[in-house]
Image (cartoon, rainbow, N blue to C red; front, side):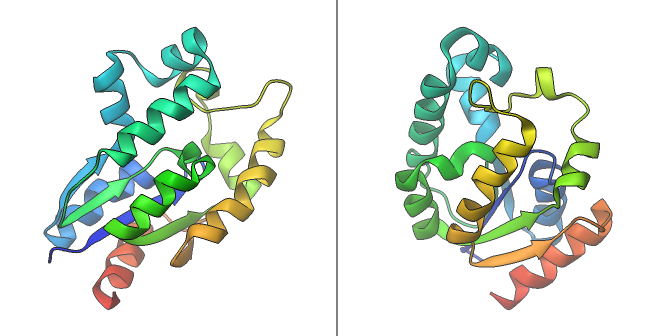
Length: 167
């Protein structure tokens, strides 16, 4: 009951949407690190990136994650959290990490609000470049990989719950 389930994955993989529903089903709390960053900065994610840049945002994300000391929670992380080895090691200590994997085409279809969403994109990089850059990082840190490309929200939640109950 005290163990945490940490969700990582590409933007639009369902970390927040499915995380809150999985938390309800698992009788756990829910925590979204993106909301923590917004609260600490008093700005939306995209505003932080636009005004202060990627490096500042990634540092703020790392600090927010390192501040976590919670139990019995499903934690949804920002897609760029895998850029910080420190943050990922901290998350590993907090619980089991489930990577919600999406193929590129599915991610691209789901990302309808790329300019307002708060996605960390390197200068001159495309969405495909970001995808290729992050893919091995998600795989490196994952305790479990859940392929969500062809799953509905309900099926993804059911899979997270089933996996969490085995952990």
